[in-house]
Amino acid sequence: MVKQTVLIAGLGLIGGSLALSIKEIKGIRLIGYDADRHALEYSKMNGIVDDIYYQFDKAVLEADICIFATPVSKTVDLIHQLNELTLEKELLLSDVGSVKSLIMNTAEKITSDKVTFIGGHPMAGSHKRGIQSAKAHLFENAIYVLTPTKKSTAEDMEKLKALLTPTKAKFLILDAKEHDEMTSVISHFPHLVASSLVHQAREWQKIHPYIPKLAAGGFRDITRIASSNPSMWKDIFFQNRDKMSRLLADWIEEMKKLKDLIDSGEKTQIQTYLEQAKDYRDGLDSKKKGAILSYYDLYVDIFDQPGALLKVVHLLAEHDISINNIEILEIREGITGVLRLSFQNKNDQQISQAILSKNNYETMIEE
Ligand SMILES: NC(=O)c1ccc[n+]([C@@H]2O[C@H](COP(=O)([O-])OP(=O)(O)OC[C@H]3O[C@@H](n4cnc5c(N)ncnc54)[C@H](O)[C@@H]3O)[C@@H](O)[C@H]2O)c1
Image (cartoon, rainbow, N blue to C red; front, side, top):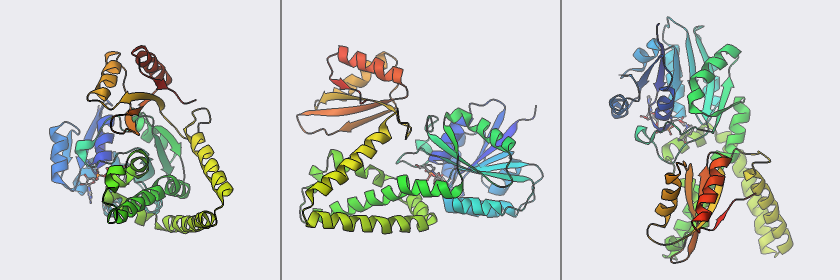
């Protein structure tokens, strides 16, 4: 039987992670292309792909399915490059770009009747970049947005979903405009705000050199995303700049109103503002309301002692429980801190609580 050839163009964090999960499917020849030969050679050496290509044209002519996992602006260039080629067989194309409108507009202009495009955006990532950070389970339980084109059929969509099934992501069909609007609100704009808060702290550090030592829980939580890949985020801001500009204008107005409330001592209105924000924020984490897919969290009190974290992790590992995420909240020298452990399912969360309680840990599950 002739194997289906799948090309991942761009073997970085996202492309590499996709390759690692798609690899599980039998009967597929997985090939890779990247502008960086080190990334390519690393993928081949570590068995992430079966074969590597140093030229996009050569690679894509071999493929039955191709997924672009390059920066958004490079994906647009590669679609143009593809459009110049004469294809001899059908090709299903997709991408992983965090901004969809430009890519979808470019893809709608593909002239070859052999090519069908469906946009994609796996909504999971990391502050790291590059193939060395790729993980097969990066997309597990994450939302994977798929955006059909005028030409793509239900059958094409099923074919793409079948390929992406090993990612264990949850598919959601959205059009490019709604995708870009929503992601600008919940992802792109918060990133800009996080970076601006870091700049503000840096300015104040000129007056108060002790600021970095005080920058604990809250500040680190809210600015964590500012540590992500700057060149990727620059690309995202510029590809989605209309929406970013609109959100900035709204935000500036909102900050002016808040400043007026603070300057005029409107305590009640500030309290109401904070309460409304808290209610909405708390609702986002609620699994009952299902507003946002969340993990099953368990809060554990630990002491700031060498090995404290290791003991907790070890106890759960002994019971074969896999922890999805660990976060240390509010730990200060010499006093207790809170550990937030996230699990994939309720069962693991509850068993972990039982194990840790039995070992005299204070634990809490938010209802
Ligand atoms: N990192 C995230 O959190 C995240 C999440 C979802 C989607 N995305 C999207 O995934 C895409 C890739 O992001 P990443 O985080 O994997 O970045 P990355 O920097 O880890 O990987 C990008 C890869 O593309 C390669 N590349 C760059 N220009 C190229 C070109 N012209 N031709 C071929 N290869 C080229 C780079 O060498 C690198 O290996 C972006 O479109 C981004 O919007 C990222």
